[in-house]
Image 1: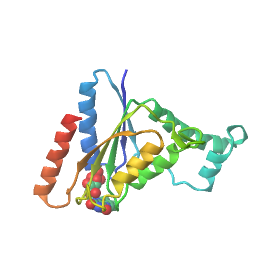
Image 2: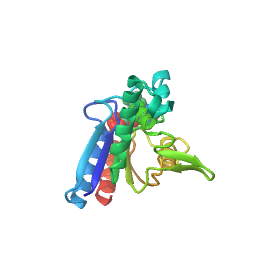
Image 3: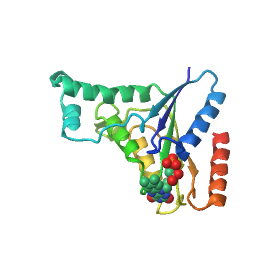
Length: 198
Ligand SMILES: Cc1cc2nc3c(=O)[nH]c(=O)nc-3n(C[C@H](O)[C@H](O)[C@H](O)COP(=O)(O)O)c2cc1C
């Protein structure tokens, strides 16, 4: 059975364009994969903490030497990794905030990037261990940047996801959402065309 993991990372709990469009994409993917199981990871409702001494200490302490508190922190990270590894299709709802991803998505990335678990270094450099997935990124943006040096989000996401082994990434953009209703409506219509084709 196909499993679709939808990761919502907007700071807004209601009305976030990235979440709304990702919901539509997931519904479409469910249609094209009958019986697919959907898992939603809502990073706004269940926020992850920023990395700090305690969290990094837990990650870098060998499992058998961890304190109970460190074990609980590592288990939280590993539960997220297991959830990701169980998915065949990953839908990432990614708002553009201050030219990057939301801090919600960044902390999620900090929790799933684990040496020896989701990537490893060998003689040939880094090897991603999260493979065989189709990833869709739904990026909602106030302005328009695709294909310009201002689009710092797309290369970042490609690099990070690729580092972990997720190289089959489809980007769906809704750009210009803060540029007036005409531009915003055209952006949503364009994103919906891309969703229909996904
Ligand atoms: C904190 C914050 C930062 C933003 N930074 C940018 C930005 O750097 N560039 C841009 O084009 N739009 C920016 N916007 C506009 C958002 O990209 C736009 O509102 C988009 O719809 C956000 O996705 P969401 O609706 O899923 O939250 C920002 C919005 C917020 C709330």
